[in-house]
Image (tube, rainbow, N blue to C red):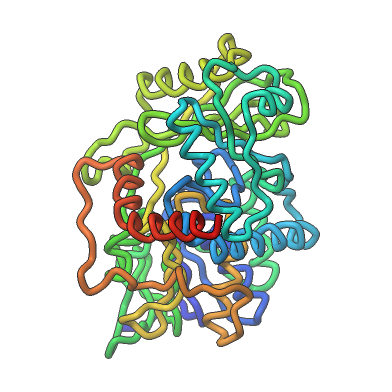
Length: 418
């Protein structure tokens, strides 16, 4: 079979992860071809609120603060460094983010989470009481605010522009971007990749990187435990709001929702979980007016200043999560030359660092941060089984169950130390 193109590396997926991988590999002199079945950033990258939160989630993954924090800190450093190189401004800004407790039970959970983070030498996170929260944003509904976890170094980014900035910079370093090019199969020979088959023909390559996130398990056995879930996003008309206003996370339908008040145009971006649909329904991007109303009403209850704001657009998207809530990043455990970057529930917090890491793996360079916890294939041979239908609340429940014993052990160690 004669290839219509050949490269050192083929990257599947044109979101922030795929374009970051393309950039860092192209800067190292490798010939890179990126294949995207639609346009750049049309998957989860273009369907989120652009929040760059160092440690998302509460009790989930609480025993792994330092390695997760190290990757997020490296990502923040790279965002600042790369903005000086990229021609496209992706509007990265440090705004701070509050994770709000809306009940007394959540108050205790958040307080314990902050204590456990401090126990693991995470000094960048703070616990705020109701009064301290109101000092930051007086417009919040005090009746629904018991406390919050606050990290001043969290921020926001224009995720759509991020993928275009990385793609343009990658092309400036010799990468090829093939849009409207769907990869239908990863080709192997003797347990080693030899390229990909696309709807336009065969591309030969020494290495393949699967950056399809929620779609990754459709092509790679390595990603069989990565499961999709549906999220929705709404955008308000431009508003005149007090500045500076940080971003927020808060409970919503057994999951977490968010509100990003930091959009440069004055719009408020809010998002949360959509209705669980079952099996392939998670890839259904059609919006339901009932989903928009449910989310908007919930956000307006917490921020009454938004009650009269008009929703000007909304969209649905698909994100993904691995069984333990930790992303899969690195070389395949079963196929030589195959690399994975998948399972991202909050990819804006890691994109640049993941691109750098994949490039370091492929080029046999030392890793900038310890990537052991992100190892691909850590769930095998047993694998996992998700309930159907599932949503992010169900998935996070499974995550908590997976690490319940280690969390309890961490709590005991903290209590023993006093």
